[in-house]
Length: 126
Image (cartoon, rainbow, N blue to C red; front, side, top):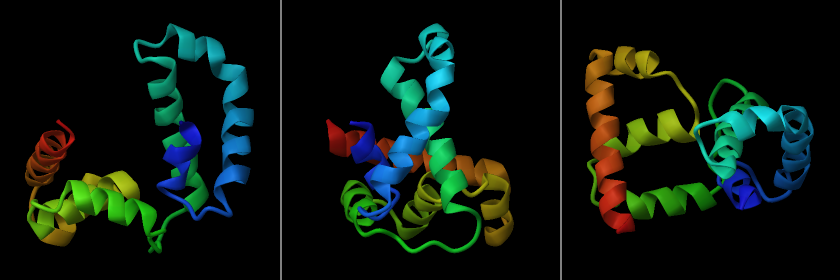
């Protein structure tokens, strides 16, 4: 399951190597995972995302195509601005304050767009 999650962010050729790196880095923290209020998988996903974003690094990214297709289908009914905010925050790991500056809005506006996009995703998943 975690491999499929990693594949949403990286090309297929890079994903196996990064998955090994993720498990190597997190192996010593398994007690932390067990003590977490999250399920083991959710904890792994949260921590893996941090490593993925570190691996990708700052700056413009090329979409792998797979996550673009998947999230586009979940957000097909959302306005373009909501899609953009979700992609920038969730896929690329940018800070909401940076997005707010780009749009000339406050971070509450970005929070609202993100919440609306998550509601749209929730409706599509049910």
